Amino acid sequence: MLGTVKSLWQRGFLATGVIFFLAVGLVFSIGCASKSARPPGRASFRVMTYNIHHGEGLDGEVDLKRIAGVIRKEKPDLVALQEVDKGTERTWRRDFPAELAALTGMTCVFSNNYSFQGGEYGNAILSRFPVKSVANHHYRMLRIGEQRGLLQVVVDVKGQELVLLNTHLDHRPDDSERLASAAELHRVVEQYEGRPIILCGDFNDVPGSRTWQKIAELFEDAWLAAGEGNGFTSPASRPARRIDYLWVTGMRLTPLRLWVPVSDASDHLPVVGDFKFRSPLGQ
Image 1 (cartoon, helix red, strand yellow):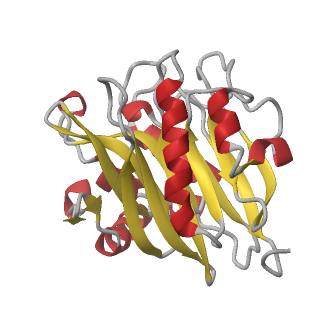
Image 2 (cartoon, rainbow, N blue to C red):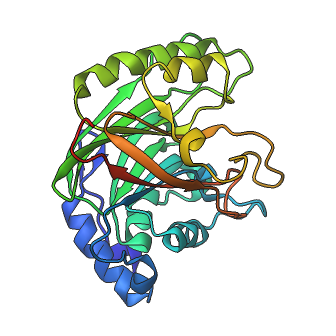
């Protein structure tokens, strides 16, 4: 069934329009549409960030249906995914972005950051909203390792533009590369001045760290405003650290509620949040 979904690419990104309509039809055919439908007329919108660990759960099995089930259960409008495979040997050359589009009924945009095992590896965004533009920025690498990136999409949220940023920073104990990437992020964000922004991802650092402080110069940690519980997301088997975040530009967006669903589908837990635009804008 998933073979009917074709990956259309332009500059390395998954084309959105055709995939969206095909995927919606497939979701109806497998009986999942009712779970992912959003209540009409909601003033808020929902965002999820999720490091999916190339679909591998705590049992060591790669199961995208299980990942999609976590997403559908939470009914997000926008999902920032990290550690996404496309055509790699370890996941049998499967096209994860196309499969996730089909399984969730959402548009999928993928960015390749790292050539891995004959395929691509990077970040992705699932969206129920129209995607107006897509860009990807590769951070400067300070040492040999995995190339990291910042996926950027502008979406139309009920007539208002929203910038959604998705990233996955370096994991090594020495924070020098994370800190350098956070500084680069500052420069990328300048081009979106005046527009509301949500920054999502796995930052591999905890609140109060140097990386966290650098990002906090521009963004508000939404968990501190509306989080329920401690927000720990890693490791999923015994959560002990808060390293996955939803950040917002506080002058334009209000966090309403954030939570961490429990799941064994990945080695991270997702973070989900409801947000609304401040009205009138800027107040």
